[in-house]
Length: 135
Image (cartoon, rainbow, N blue to C red; front, side, top):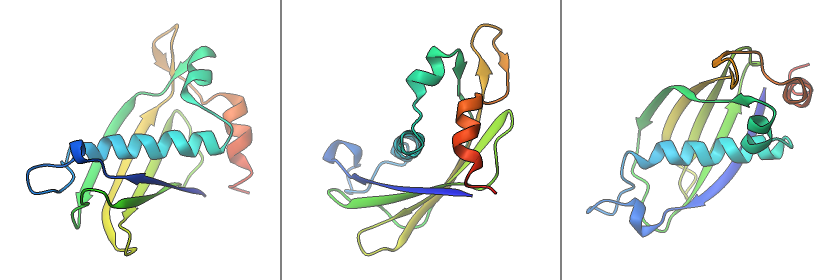
C-alpha cells in the first residue's frame, strides 16, 4: 500500500454562496492529490504521456461528510491499496484543519496506449517505483 498526503487551501472562487466548497470542485482536489502522489514517486502525467500512455478517469465516487470552507487548509490523504493492472484505484480522505474527516472518495483510472487507443499495462518504470511499497 502506498499513501501520500498533500495540502490545498480553499480559494474564494471554489466556494458557493454559503461559503462551502462547491461540490464539483472535489474532483479537482482529487486530481491535485493524485498528481502530487505521482510526483512523490518521481512520475508525472507529462512524462507518462510522452512515453505514449495516458490515464483517463473511468469512475469517480465522492461522499460529503462536512463542508470545506473558504480559506481552510485541507489535507488530502491519497492511498493506492493494490498494485495496478490495466486500472489503478485511488482512495481519498480529506481532513479540515481540526483534523476532522470531511470527505471520502475514490477514482479509478485506466492506462491507455495513446497510439492504439486501447487499455494497456502500466509503464514498467512506474511499476518498479510502486512495487517497493507492496512487498
